[in-house]
Image (cartoon, helix red, strand yellow):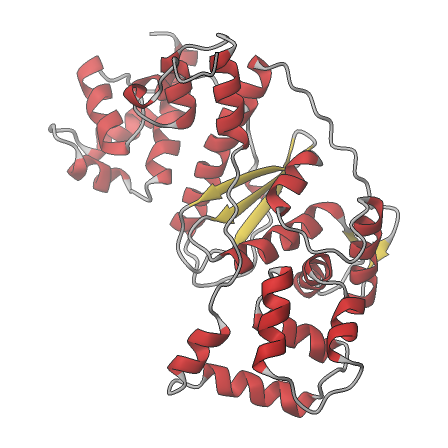
Length: 354
């Protein structure tokens, strides 16, 4: 067996296993056939090549097509390229799973873009201005809003907006401890979102990760807070917040906060944080709000504050390109199913308007 084939198979097997958060022993126990963890280790290192029967069993256990194991690598994202928020509770296995799921989706996107002859170079460059304060981070968001002609308007479809700018968005089902991550992939910015989150949280995370990729931060800056400031300003400009609330308030009503949440797709907690940051409310009021919301006995109030009011948005970029290629007979239904990760029976090539 060709050594290069062995290497591809081994790496693909290891990646598929990591996507499922399985150890080699756990995968061995999940298989419907007798196969040791030691044998799996040898497959992954390219020292052995499994029979077609074993490959089929591995594919079923890992929820992938057999073809996946033999597909040449088209996208590689080094571990150092990922920008994960520092969360001690998100384990190494979970991080590896998210990285592999995102890389797999990015490969599918790259494959179908090649088929459709799409080459969209990323052209945004904000590295000319270093960012060290939240005022500077907000200024960069205002700059982007102005360049996009958004003014003070709400952003209704941020995923579509970022994709039109050359970002690639991937959604993965992950633990609630995971918000998002990002990486530059061959000069293409990739943002990964937790698909299980409510719309307001996904929208905020999307722009937070955009800031990671777009801005240049001064050494020693609190990058996470600056990315939050950028995200908040993208969702609702500070000038709008002051127009709606006034420059100084002793307290805020639930109704007016809900109104801004509904209009701009930003959570009440993020609005309160921004109001405090701009000194619309003082330290004492902001502290009381946080204590009240987080108090264990205030379950009903916490549910009201964190209730989602915004329409969900999901990326359809990969699916749109696959269906476009299918309708133009550039790919087969089997290839379309493989790219979308669905059964071939669910792909209907006749479902096209004539």
